[in-house]
Length: 205
Ligand code: GAR
Image (cartoon, rainbow, N blue to C red):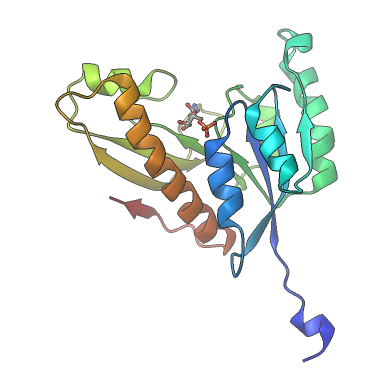
């Protein structure tokens, strides 16, 4: 085999975070060995996001674009975010606890290749406070969803879901912690499948 034939072409993945970045970390750790993708950028709208330091320590390029100086000007914030993203030239963008709403123009640019993880069994409970809403509704199952990002909030095509039982004494935080463990498994499994070009749904229990 020549050197050129042996060269593997990985899908390039950029990950956007806002906080601790435990999902980002699960994704990065999954992208090794025979995985078809590799992380090329971790970016955050919060320069204090704990995940940025961890990613830099892994040798991954990081970018911090503080949204606050932009006030309500989402387009200007997104233009600043776009610079490191275009530079990293990602094939896939994973939103992983990224808590800014993106404009339709930004989403259109990456249509079909931007994923998000949401802590509910969509279409139930788009938006915030998903675990409390599941408890208030006395649901017996909760979970998380990986979906394609479209201009409608938390409503793009579903690529994967993982379910967890709601236990009798669950609080918002115990339920969130149990769902988060499944988020890490689900996002890694769904990205792996998606990066091969397979959009078949991943279902984990
Ligand atoms: C995760 O539970 C993720 O599903 C949620 O924020 C948390 C981020 O945790 N995302 C949303 O609510 C998006 N609407 P992490 O920073 O440890 O991955």
